[in-house]
Image (cartoon, rainbow, N blue to C red; front, side):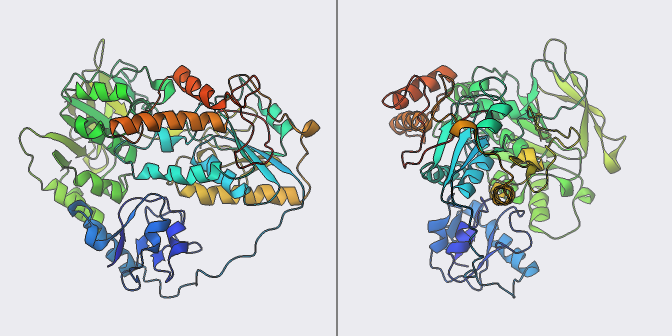
Length: 550
């Protein structure tokens, strides 16, 4: 098997299109594309040319001869996929759908949210001549969860930023960062000043447990904890007591595994990443030696993906254990089941830090007076009524899912936490993409196909004459004084990466808003006219105006 995909990838089809023999699946148009956890290389037809490695933005593909011991299970994943999905009838990738033509003239679009969904939407729009896009975000920095959500020990996943930098360099692209809709600008301003507005604001809050003790000191959301160790400016000053020996993470999705991994990681290893300096100092002083990950359902229903489970199982110096009865393991002979069975059979090594995956257990109360001391739990499903007891812990983090906030000026379905839409269209001129459109599901690459559908609906409306022209041509270059443009972001990025180079790290993040704005001023100063906003991409083209949150 010449090449192997070794992690959850962006699934944006770059490698699929680069492959001259169409050996990477599922490809665009095939069942599962954009929904599978990863892509798979067919060992029967791969010709070992390496074209896929050059195209992959996150370095997920490796020759089989360069796999580490921890990556060897991905060989089995590839084999198992093609046993079930032989892909005998292959559509040649040279078949290209007709290129869409839009009416001549200017089309100005505001995108609200500078995360993957917003930037993929901008990329789709900028494929057409005459389109300009201004991407807004309430933070001084873009990239959303790709910057503030991906764990610092997953630097390979963060390489998706290369794609985003390419989007930023396109003619017609501009930023207006550090601007909040409802404070600095309003929905009505965007509707007035642009032909269309695409909201890609994500799901910024967490779900709550709804049990007693949830608001005690020492009980927090994993969403906030992840933002803290990633240097999110809203959480730079947060404090987490890591003075106890056990922490509990409630939930068993990928975020729960990320948090467990960071809490038990070797600080020396983390010191070579882009983790927040404040979080690194706290973890260096941490006394946590065990993290228990509680899942309400059984191992077959766990929300974590197989690549993340494999990465966890391969940790060096950390015991990863599964606390489950043999009869609770799924009866199928899949790679996922085999990994779980192997972990369940492991014997812990005395003195090692450990992560314990415990299934069919739910918390009923978080215990403590002035701070968390533990939580009461009970069994669920076939184990209901069993296993009731107490788990001692000084830190409890809930990782049971993200939830979107209502968007001012837009309808909102509180049951699903999304904005009602049809193919991304809320109404002609107003659209949604990403998690605010479909809920918190999918991977980074899922946002590309999601954005493509939304942009298609937007262009349909433009071609049908349903979009209203901006009033007086739009407020080009205007905005509130602290708005940050593309030059300002590049100055922030340059300063962080320069300091990272001095320390042997990818970057050293600026985590305080004022420090970020100070860095932005140094980049925007030569061109600014009373504001931090530099109006256009250095590649050219007049931008639209506006600004908002993500």
